[in-house]
Length: 154
Image (cartoon, rainbow, N blue to C red; front, side, top):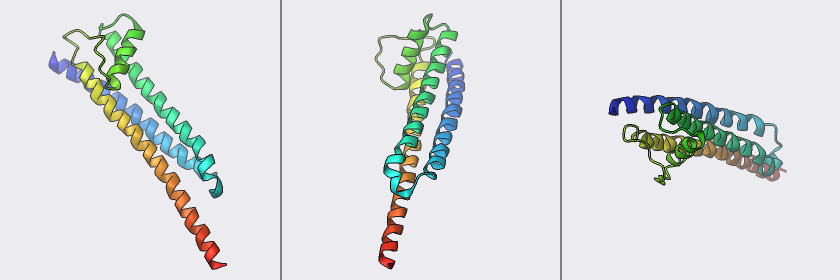
């Protein structure tokens, strides 16, 4: 049963990784495309909108992953109610570990596997947001340096 749980968990983790990678890459590309349309003097204000869109997209990607784990728990017969399955999944994914709902001893191992998956996927979201913020800081620094050079040459 341990091997079966690992295989089921691995499959779910790979699906989550594919979703997370797609969403994270989309968010970074979206941000870079949008920030190019902004005038340098408006980076601090106009750069926030695409940053917020990227953050919401990553949260939605996380909600999809939590939902997929919840549906998996339903399919495996661990829960009969979707709300309870998704709640349990969210608690695992976020590594909260309330323990108010526990799966059967045969599928209990999926909880820690989902928690490991959640930590990794949330870390990828944080990394993608950091790349976006670095892009914004780099653009502001570059434009501030160019403005200083222009002032010095006049």
